[in-house]
Image 1 (cartoon, rainbow, N blue to C red):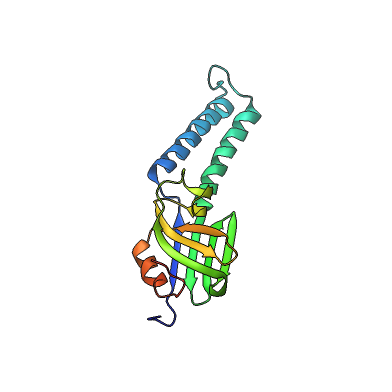
Image 2: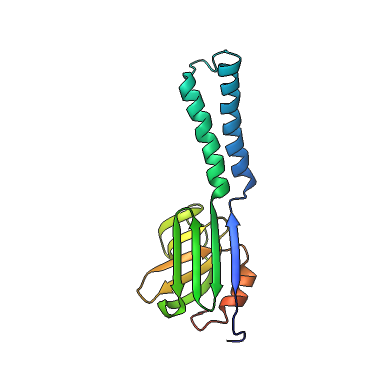
Amino acid sequence: MQNNNPEFIETQSFNQWWLWVLLFAIFGVGAYGLIQQLILEVPFGSKPMNNVGIVGFSLFNLGMILFFRWMRLETKIDAKGIYMRFVPFKTKVHTWEEIESISVVNYGFVGGWGIRLFTNYGTVYNMRGAEGLAIKLKSGKKYLIGSQRIDQLTQVVTQYPQYKA
């Protein structure tokens, strides 16, 4: 090991512009309908929802915006091991003694972003892109953490004995 305490910290969130355009467009339609129907008292659409339905639709859309804003993928690699937290779904903490091997890979398209099950790398946790850290545990389980800072990640993990090129 070149450095006694190499460390990597990364926090990722959904910041794809098209996702936010889509979420705000859907919210905007609901908000417009809410204003038209509840404030202006003009039914919204050719088959309008009742007032409770349109309020519920708008609140659901607001909730989706807040949920995607809150979601994030946190990764920390240090002398203790690997910490991964996909807020609000999953947290994984593994010491170096539990880890058989790690490697930086280009995993390609795995069917989207978020949590992807049953891939060649086990479970994939990613926010965007197609590169990350593949982890194989001594128990035989494996998973992958996506990264947007692949050069810094590579620089740190190559200093641990579990690294496999």
